[in-house]
Image (cartoon, rainbow, N blue to C red; front, top):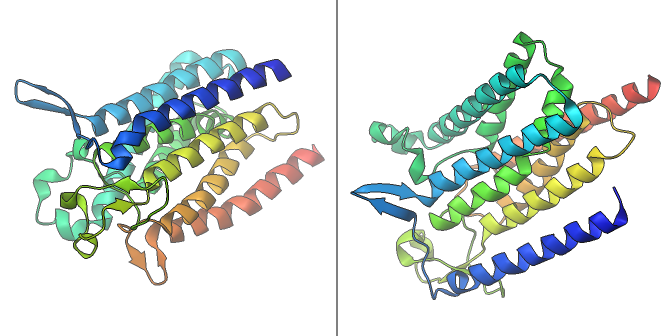
Length: 289
């Protein structure tokens, strides 16, 4: 990839970042309050969370098909079947794990279990459910498993970055009180009772979205590296994302704690401890071939 094309991409990224910052400014200042409903049509509410999750999935699928056509060359029909099962597995895994974590609430509100348009998706559940579905369907259809995992991993951070803005419109998944220049105003009805007197909080949705975009760029840079064993992109994604999520969890106030760490931090540690040795093994195996 030429230096000119990299400069163009950096310039476009900078313009996009400035645009998003300008758009968020009045929301973060409390001048405009985010509305979780983007369209109310004859009493039917269409919510930003559901729209953004849909856009995230479509963006990933579009990128997968483009990458496959240019670089991976999997047969279209098996690839389509694998993607369908992966999306279904990811959504089911995300919701099942979230409901399991919050079972004390859902046990008394069973009718809300599948109302995902209001939020409530676990990224670790999505990774587990999607990975299981991807592995099983690729095995049945006899598709190269390490390569298909690399293909999906190249697109995942972009989808995550888009989906995180659903948390913004729902006024959820924010961090603790802060007076930093990039603080975000949260309406009193969404604040935990112990923080009712605080107006501004860490925009942890944005921390994670920015991290996702950085990971997206790092994976693409590595994708064009000559010394890259099959499967290493997927493992690198798990390690880098888990490391960043571990850090972001320190700012969040809505996470379930298990001992001194949150449940998501324990999950992140497990993925890093598995991922780093696997990454070393893949590189050693690649070097011996």
